[in-house]
Length: 302
Image (tube, rainbow, N blue to C red; front, side, top):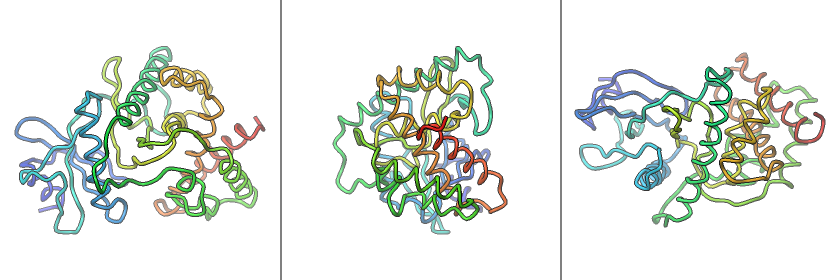
């Protein structure tokens, strides 16, 4: 029996296919009364307490009517089960829809429709933040911190991006310059955020949007969610229109703040690649190039 099959058995489920293998393995699972997403959590990334906290938060958001995947208890009533190989598994509700887009690709929908979807995404993020502010967190609630230290401190959550092993001396100087700039600039309301609002984590069903993959959620600046939603398109010609639509849906006029958090996410993504990808993976160079573009954009060179 594979670990996925072992995990599925805790929900009386059957594994259908692998959907994603990044921080977690995510699989489509057939249950007796429908489908679910089965997650096998990578050891050492999030603690059991942090995963349980994420599941509680998503359950509360779903209970409030937000289009996010709520947790599904296992047969024994637990939200998190431990597998024989030491990993933990959880199951969340299945949400229908197609991804808004994928990393590195363009949009397949007409731009007018895409702009409407970004406006809807901004409104969803505003609602998510508003509902979250009305929750009372349970004792022991634990999630990572995407605050100033978590993004640009001496030991950021995703690593010291300015020490990237293939960065040139000029790139490293720019990364340090951007880091120091953001240490002075980052500010604004802080609370629980999704922290990974990439296009593949936004599902489109008709004219509505849903949000999945809360694995990196934590305490951070609220505008970080908007910056993350824009980082994959920052080099595209429609970026300004997408930014304005997202901001209008969210209800903010802080353009400089959104651009600063887009830069912060671009820098964090450079750090993310260091322990996860082989040094000859082209994503290293593309992420460094994107960070350089964002640095020039925010610090006044573009």
